[in-house]
Length: 177
Image (cartoon, rainbow, N blue to C red):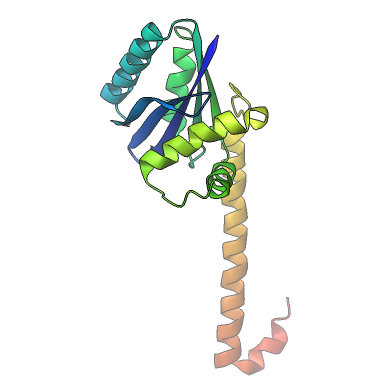
């Protein structure tokens, strides 16, 4: 079974795609699709045509975690697994960035980013976990928000203390806690 790697560089409202083989040669040139129903249908069409010409193959798709922008594409790939031989993974952007830096690639176009993602899938196959849904994503997002509010509260109290000290230094002895 031949392996192909689909790099997906997700941005606000669109995504760049490229398909590489195991030798990191481009099999399907870079293309960009909007994150709309029509864009999803077009991606399905491209994958269908690609797999018609490359029967008995598997596509490994990788998307960087970009704060939720990748969710629509990830869910689409999960649905496509019923029809096609596709595996999908969310990737840590730091790992992909460091992989690109190690390859001395300084260009940061969307096209190059999609290639870096596919290259990361090929080079670091042992580090990629496919088809794992993050059941705690919503809880983690809520916890980050609570941590942000605590930091904000601390900053505001420090600001208040500084203002009190500048305007009414005699009150500060009563505000130790």
